[in-house]
Amino acid sequence: MADKEPSWRAWDSRDLEFLFGANAALADVPLGKAESVNYAARDGLPQQGYLTFPPQVETDGTVQFPLDLHGGPWARDSYGYAPIPQWLANRRYLVMQPNYRGSTGFNKRHLTAGFKEWGRAMHMDSLDAVEFAVEREFVDREHVAIVGGSYGGYAALAGAFLSSFHARMGHPEHDSDLLDAVSPLFHADKIVRPLLISQGANDPRVKQSESEQIVAAIEAHGGSVIYVLYPDRGHGWSSPTNRIEFFSKDEVFLAQRVGESVRVTEGLTVDGNVEGASAIARVVGE
Image 1: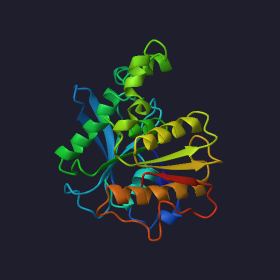
Image 2: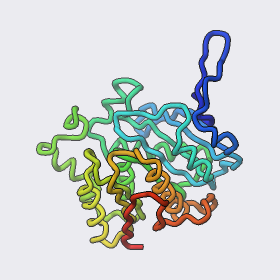
Image 3: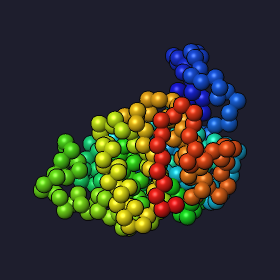
Image 4: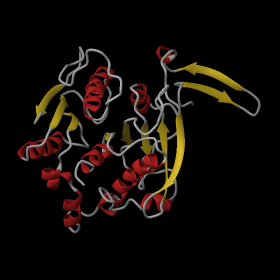
């Protein structure tokens, strides 16, 4: 695997043999270099993540900076070609994928440090990733966005306001005060940043009613949100057309909010649809 080239090679002790390329259409597209970085959280817990640099752009403190947060959260980002960071880097963003506490693939301490820390220490780890990039003089704090799906979508909502499942998140009865304290739904009045939310009507994990709850709460408090419903989508992106359609909206949304110098594909709009996509978009507070 490689960061900039979606292809596979066989390796033994002497030779590296090319097997196949995964996407010939990307052969002449400028893609970004990915770099593994290590830093410390504010409480000293070791952290690791990946920076994907925009090609042919100086990271001099003025570049825009999305955090791309993986789902799970008991999963992790790994080194290799990553479509979303490469898409954002191609649009002149510097992208960070932090493996915050609770991520798998490191050690037991790193995994269990995320128990009952949704919206708390796990979120602070993401903010510490921002501080790492600021200290390296890559970005400034005024041009930061959060993107993600599943748990990453929750973290984006949590960032808009500052187990078993029970062991990791808290028991719904015994820890109700804790869960209310870290639930964006109970802090909708504090969500002042604009949001773009996508939802699959057939998602068995993140229910349509749950997304519509937070949209209604934000609307009730005068906030700004674009809600995009896909009637034929589940948890994730099985349809290439729907995937392209949503990321077209996301490209415009990011450029309008944080991307003063980024590139936007000509003709894209937040409320426009790609032919064949099933999206139903609703704009609140624009």
